[in-house]
Length: 493
Image (cartoon, rainbow, N blue to C red; front, top):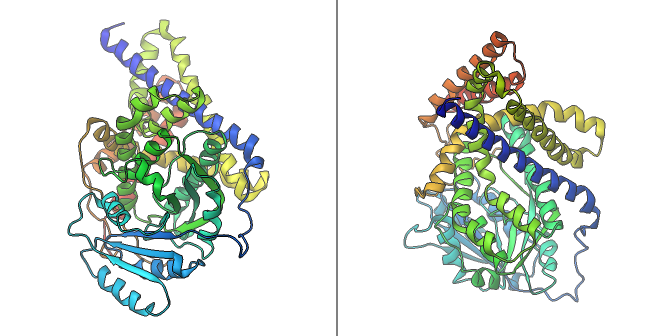
């Protein structure tokens, strides 16, 4: 074998090994979910009048949210909590008419006893993390509840979450995200499919196993002293929530996840908005891994907790491995037929099948928790999982760019995901002010990759080697779908 061929095999094998190990960790989370889900206490009844409620500050970080800000303020104003113990901070960095809408809505609630505070900073330094830290310095509550602009918390949210701080080391209570517009389109249904698995199997599995979990940036409550002890909100990563979560847990704070408390929110309906969100999440995760991986390796903790924390921090790297495995799979087909002595080595490809089975169990479990029926779950699961996996593969190039930028330390601004208040299928976002319609150069490459993996299908028939045919079909579909969505959603109405 030549040196380039050896390098090809080595990179392909390492990527397969990472995907395999990642899938085993997800399978272990599935095991933890099934074996410990009944031991997780459901949200208890709201305490009676003898309960002493603490002071709470609700922080609403806002930046140009004209379509949802009024809905958010009304929802937070409806929170069932003693008014004299509730401070609501509207952390407004807006540069459009959102600020005027806030002032009008505050005027409507004047005289209601609500302590609504319109907080404007001199500049937008630090983006969301900067706004939260600025508001924290003026917060009067012992606990800090945070909601992004597209969330609509239920009136009993605080009375369901605050009692979960039942001892002094509980630093965070995180709740499950719901979806206001899950059925808006295929794109929103597939996002809900993936997010539900995180908020069901992943968060419950980690929390029940005593492993690190993450505050999801919104729909959760922090103990103020936990934020301060962990060093406050920092803006050196794009995922300030994951960063602070690890700093707090490395200092011994406990996190609690309440699957039974739901806070619904709006899913991105346009490919540009979804890509923007995915870019921030995946790059921020890589930045946080760069910042904290060494600390996790050195900190005293059980082996399984350390293992889960490592793969939790490195989870965005799965996109890099998927992309490299996909790109190298076609050259590997040719190499397999030109070097017969490597036949045994190519059996490593079977790791993809094992990995797929682990992911099948992970996502099937999530969907089963919604339906409660094996038949209904399986009937829905087969097409949704196939399409979700294909689209995830199709996003791998875009997300790989983000991950590599994160690991290399290239800094970029925090771009918030636009929200459009989409309640019905006929609602349109195309003429809205925040619609992301610009095309990234990566989009052209996504179209070319769809053609490339179509060629991979032809190679399978030419070489009469069909082992990777389903893989290449899903890649062609995924990259093709992302390319078409990107083009279509770049057009305004």
